[in-house]
Image (cartoon, rainbow, N blue to C red):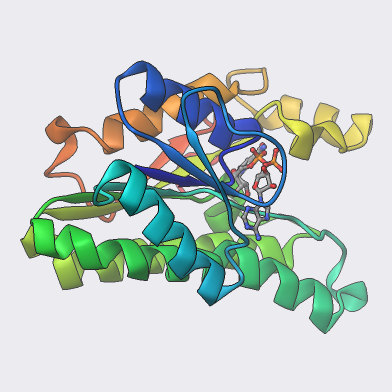
Length: 230
Ligand SMILES: NC(=O)c1ccc[n+]([C@@H]2O[C@H](COP(=O)([O-])OP(=O)(O)OC[C@H]3O[C@@H](n4cnc5c(N)ncnc54)[C@H](O)[C@@H]3O)[C@@H](O)[C@H]2O)c1
């Protein structure tokens, strides 16, 4: 399997969980170190040549990629009037176009093998919205369209495509948020706490399992109820 952005945070937890379950795991990332036992592949998902080379390296080491978790993501938050084209492009290029690049490459061997699991790491804000995150929430909402279109294209070949939509999870990404923003979110989260990376990894493992073969085009929230109904 391949996890993008697997050297840190949620991706790292996903890598750890699949390693523990006995999978051969490649982490495509630009920095940091992969978990012991994972194949670390240096890959910036915004670069098509690097993506192709990374898949070749992963396939040579681990065989065809049957499970893809497109998890690499960045934020460049600011209110719309201050959001530059560069802020927009950077986030769309990693979160959305990067996911497209890896999904396209992985779909090739999944279709051939007539089995595959694609899981995109979306976000609660993709459907809920978030002030200051027009670029980020747009990129995450688009992953829902991508998963559903993939489902219609290749669902008949034994391939599923789903979105896990984490809410506020304790990671480096959320550690930079000001205390008042965290307090505001805590007040809105029915579970009255932030989530843990292990809770997202568990949801991804389920969607990638054999038993989840009839679940496709779904958005699975892991958000303590924050985004209910969206
Ligand atoms: N932390 C949260 O609360 C939260 C909530 C909802 C969704 N998410 C999503 O979950 C995913 C992981 O988030 P996280 O909190 O673990 O973030 P993180 O910043 O801790 O880790 C992201 C990883 O992706 C890698 N990465 C970034 N750009 C890349 C690129 N161009 N090519 C390859 N790798 C790249 C980074 O090096 C890093 O290892 C992201 O898609 C994020 O949008 C996070």
